[in-house]
Structures are given as C-alpha cells and as structure tokens.
Length: 349
Image 1: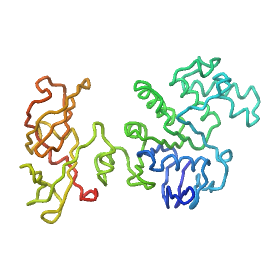
Image 2 (image 1 turned 45 degrees about the horizontal axis):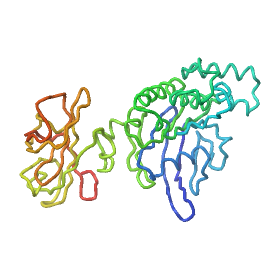
Image 3 (image 1 turned 90 degrees about the vertical axis):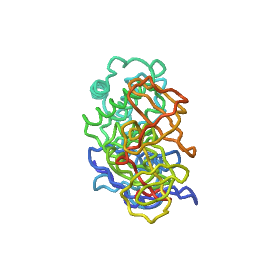
Image 4 (image 1 turned 120 degrees about the vertical axis):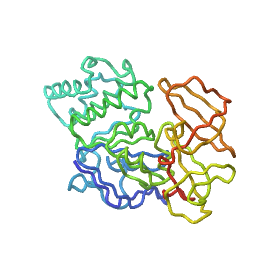
C-alpha cells in the first residue's frame, strides 16, 4: 500500500509544526522518520494513523484519500513505545482483541491468533498476562496485535526505546523479518540512527518540521547534503573542523593542517570539514599530530579521541591495538578522499 503525504501541514493553535510536507512511501517499503526530539516525526506518524487531523494538504493510502477518515476506518496497525497491552487479559486475548471488536467469531479469532503468534515466535506464551512477560515478549505481543487485523500500513513509534541493548538488536532483525515476510508498508519513528539504518529501506531525516534529506541508508551516510545529516548518521559520530579555503585546500589557521579539497570556493571562504572516524587513522594521506584524550575498547575495535592544534578534536576507530593509551602523542592521518566539506551554513559543497 503506497502512502502519500501531499503538502501535509499540521499546526497546534498558532504553532506550526509541519508545513507543506511532501513524502511518498512505496508499497512494501519500510521507511524511517529520523530526527531529534521535537522535529515533527511523531506528529507525522499520528497524522498518518488518524490521531491528528491535518490542518492542510492530503494523506492518501494508495489512491484513497484518508485525510478526514478516523483511525478505525484507515486499517492501520500501530505499535507504541509503551506497548499499551491490557494487563487483565492473557496474551491470546490481547492479540485477538482487535478481531473481537470487529465481531469475528471465536473460532476464527483462535485460528488467527495461532497464526500470528507463530509469526512473531510467542506461541508458548498464550496464557500468560503482560506482567509475566519480559520487555521483548511484550513488544512481540504488541506487534502481533497490530498485525492480526491485516493492516494496510504498519506504524511503529519508538518501539525499541524501552528495551536493553541485546533485546534491541534482536528485535531490530525480528521486526524487519516480519515486515519483509508480510510485505506490509511500514513507517518507523525513531531518534536512533542505528535502528533507522539497520531496519529500513530509506530514511527521511527531519529537522524543525522539514525533511532535510530522503535516501537509502548507504546513500545518506556516504553522501549527506548537510552537516546536520552527516552529524546525525554514524556511530561513532563524525567530527568537524573549522577552517578556510587556502590555495585549493582546507586550512586551519591555528595549525599547519592542509587538506586538499575538490570544491570551488573563493580564497578565505569559511569552511567546515567533516571527518568520519574510519577516515582518521595511520593510513591516511594528510598527516596530523595530536594527543590522545580518550580511549575506549569496543571489543573488535578501539575508539580514540585525539586533540589537535588549536583544541579541535578528531575521532578515530581502529582494530584493537595495545600500543596507544590516553596521554600519548600520535601522528596519524586524515584520508582526504573520505572527507566532507560544508559551507558556513552547513550546506555540503
């Protein structure tokens, strides 16, 4: 089921949250609305599911205009951060509740509950109540309840926020598996870029009610339009250096660092250089001397923060090594082919 937001706008009183948004989600696609708190991603999701009514524009499911339809007439499944399970009902009763409300007979409900519980791997939990379940199990129940009605669209609002790190990893793959197996169109709202990149076909990064970039995870990571996008994607995050254009290179006035850049800019133009951790290591082409101010072992890799001349910071991620500790002076290098250059307003050059 294709979803189209056609000049969608939403205001609360005199406060404009979103204005003239245009977004199309392809049938069977899983798309992430990614951004910081207050950027409008949940407002957009709630408008799609019918909780919020748009103040302008249209919302289409396929060719059907659902802009003014209430939630119960849109055939959407929603999974909230809180799971919102009924504590007095068993797992089976929670999952089957949407069908009971629709008047489906008990035998058909049992059959559908059995089918959907198998899909989300909770068939052995049917007689338990929510208080007897782990966070991951509760989330699977909430997902099964959303899917049992065979919705045209699945909406996920920060569904992994309440889980620990191991369960988040497990449920990322599980939700993606289920979405692919069912072929349902899905929208994930999250502020976690790892979730967005690992679970979704495309990402729409939002800032102050606008979509600033829409692309596949790989394209957005490798080709960000703005410093905001570059800074939002990547773990560990990118670091930025401030400087100017000088004789065809990025130059930092307080140091001797010169990074050749393939952009056209007037001499003295203020620039920001984005350097991802994988592009600062001993193998680059622009030598940089600095002092290690932070070191963290992450299992297969080590993460380092290196302070360079003028107090600026570069971050490096490398295979495990035991020859570098906090306080050491290192001479590593920036890979000039991997850097991003932005103007003074944060636009990619």
